Image (tube, rainbow, N blue to C red; front, side, top):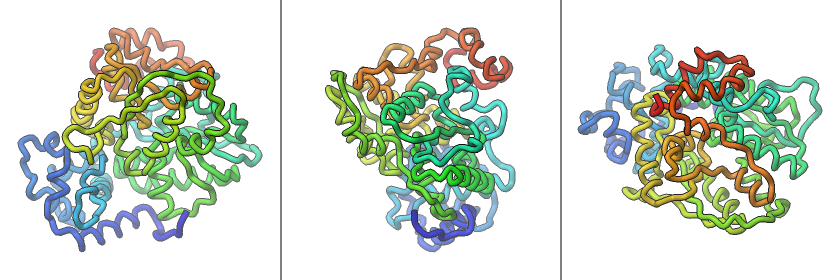
Amino acid sequence: MGERRYSSLRQYYEETVREAMEECTLCGECVRNCQTFPLIFPGGKGQGDIMAKLLDFLKGGTESEEVYRKVFGCDGCGNCSSFCPQGIDVLLLHEAAKIKLADRQAFPAAVNFVLPGRRPNLYDILSSLQVRPEEKRWLTRPPAGVKAVQDVVFLGCSLPSFPHVAAGFLEIMEELEEDFVALAGDELCCGTSLCPAAGKVDEAEQKARELVESITKLSARRVILLCTGCYRQFTEFYPKFLDLDFDVVYYTQFLFEKLGMLEFRRPLERTVVLHESCMTRRTGLFEPTKGLLGAIPGLKLVEMKNPEAETQTLCCGGLANMTFPDIGQRRGSTLVEQTMRVMAEFVLSTCPFCQLAFYPHARTGAFAIQNIPGLILEAMGRATYEDRLGRYWRCESVEKIIAESREFFEANGRTEEEMRQILPMVFPVLG
């Protein structure tokens, strides 16, 4: 996976900042092409000098409210990096500034709800609403005394929030007779929620080292990932400071390679609008995903384009949904508006955050949300798993969700008080 270049993740960010400071001309292209900037600073206030303030802060200068809002309001789409004429990965500068702010204990309170080990935890609550302990087909801590396996399927923190997707993929793995074990967070975490999301770089590195050690102990030859955030960590960051003794693939890449072993028996005869997420573009995963879906009999794909700038993705709000939910939700509204505009009957995205952005509107019947493992199982003539999160979105209130999900969350040892803390964040329109 490449040579180790840095002693730590922190050092990688520090060296990246040092190099960027030598190359940045403060031309302003990154800010002019930032679609989140008008939401962070209405009226364009501060557009001319925000990068100067950001670089000054990274050099050891003064912390400011503008820098704080700019970096934690960032959705992580990466448009800034795409438009830099110097080739600077500007997104990494935003993430480096988060690290300096977090070192000073300056980060949005909302981020605490997605950090591993904290309670209540957003992902844990969403999973607890939908699946009983005996239904979980994954382990939440490294197995003891397990023989070596060919593959580790790592679901991360977020995929257990979509147990119908996780269970569907694991059933396909069993159908293919793969030798694997499935692991999930939050004790096992890739680190995304810690850094880049919250700037807690040392904690993120510790989680990364623990996760890689757990996988290595299983003598796995390959890790299959279902979260694009996890994929970025494993492929972009880990090789900078860790030696990986296994291959890393995204689940759509894996399934594309296994197409010859998947027996499709039922043409689906439907049109699905495929959304390219920001992280799918950054990690180069969109093409293999299209190739996989294009092989399903009867399935017609339509790519969703950004009507304002086709070279830019339609962002769901990304990391801003964790740090500044109001900004993230407004950013995601553009994605949903375009979905409505193309008159989509079925919508598909491989990004967990994008999926969450679609749910409030899917509840009205405007379109239905699909998932890749579900489509494959259906084309194979197999039963699919119920999307219980979608069912809860059709409830009339948070009170109704609590009543319908009580048997699930109590079986998982979660309390009604925890539900009342988290559910209004996830289902804000229900009240």
